Image (cartoon, rainbow, N blue to C red):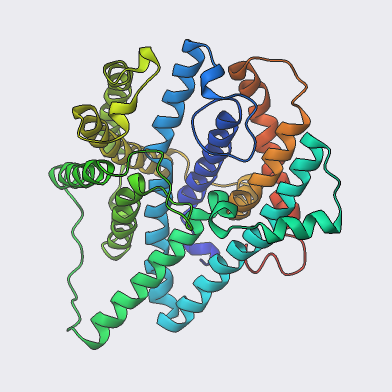
Amino acid sequence: MPEKQRLRYIDNIRIFLTGIVILFHLAITYGAPGGWYYREFEVSQLEPITQTVLVLFIAANQAYFMGFFFFLGGFFAAGSLKRRGLLHFFFQRLVRLGIPLLLFVYLVSPCLRLIQRSILFGQAFTLANLLDTYQSLIFGFELGPMWFVLLLLILSILYILIKLMQKYLFSKSKKIPAYPTRVKIFTFAILIGAVTFLVRIPLPIGFVFQPLNLQPPFVPQYIGLFIIGIAAYHGNWLNQVNINIFPFWRNLTLILVLLMPLLFILSGGLEGDVTPALGGLHWQSLAYSLWEQLFCLGMILSLLSYFKNRLNIQGKITRELSTNAYAVYIFHTPVLVLFTMSVRGVNLQPIPKILVLALPALLLCFLSASLLRRLPGLRAVL
């Protein structure tokens, strides 16, 4: 996007969300539930209070941050397609999403696995072991957090196909999507929550579809928000977001935050088993699915209004951070894994260790991405 047209508050939101991704995976490293390359603690090893704090942290962020990324993905996809045209947009998506995807799967992830085995188990870093790693490579398992890039690429291609159908099979509609009322927003949240609940009956949270390394229990939200992002671009919705909407959505989000521990307790959290909330025909799963979507939309609207009216400015440092945000997402995995393995000898409990390492981890990930983007050829795809 040309500099004069940049939405600086959106750039700042991208910095914020990327930072949350790093902290999310840092929390998993030290005992929060979830899959990751390196775990120093398992959930079962944690004290009840520590376990509760980390579970709530993971659940709260999981509810909105990737959905927000897909909303932004849809918004910028619509703008890019309009500016570039279908063919140019298609090739631009292949370059910006496809090349980093292949780079991660066939270079970053295998090398990380080998380095990890060398550090933790003393396995020699040799060509023979590298070849053995490649022979055992499974696309989905090597995707790691790049499932997001893969799904975004799939949704972008489906978007192109739909636009082609509209162009050649149907008459073009000039109707501009109207800015949604609160009733429409709540209705959307309830519909996505209901679909999410139905999906989670056979496929509860924790189920992973390979070879995409994708969790179907969250996909309805991602697809829905990608579509909403497209509508937001065509309806010019972001220009209609103002500070007046902030108190309502902030207050709603705070209420939902206060309800979260109650839902956690009613789902068996104090007994260490929240299975009823994860899926199946349980009222807790329905309640959590609805809570999740309302919290997601509340967070998105709160952050949009707050950043637009309070943080719609950038200096040299924030411009550099936002420029590198995509590269941070791609390369934070090896940086974070190697960093946390290097300090595994620091004897601290999980939460204090997370607090101590949070800022160094963030700085290291952003600095590494900035340096990597300066390598020949990487800037064009990152």
